Image (tube, rainbow, N blue to C red):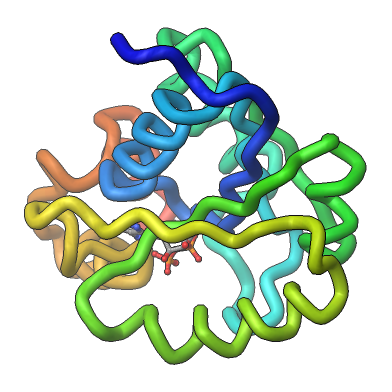
Length: 166
Ligand code: ADP
């Protein structure tokens, strides 16, 4: 594999729950940067109450990224740029799905740039097979008993089913 660039990148999200689309972005970031910190937003502002606690969301991701060797997972509830600074990150890496993510990310980018011009936001295009995959879509599918194979890690699929049956 090509040499990685030095430094840390942060991959933020609510990850409620983590999908294979998220794992794809985290994996690709871990191939570019020599350290990746996945930041799990404890209290998402733009979303309702989460299905899984921050601890559960962290645990799901931790299990999946363990084989990568250079990825850590932490919950955070301060400003993203502050969390990035605390971790010595020089970049925020996010995934961009077909059209839908652009407007929101464009706005967040300007705000984060204003607060922390030294931290660059970088965007990886979603893999074609995950371009229309979202945590909210997965939850809807699970609610109606849909098959989550190939969309989320197996432990997430079974625990999501359990959580939504309750
Ligand atoms: P969601 O929008 O699915 O609830 P998050 O808020 O947890 O996800 O998103 C965390 C980051 O992962 C965001 O940068 C988002 O654009 C990205 N992302 C989410 N789903 C995918 C996917 N299927 N492919 C690539 N990136 C994704």
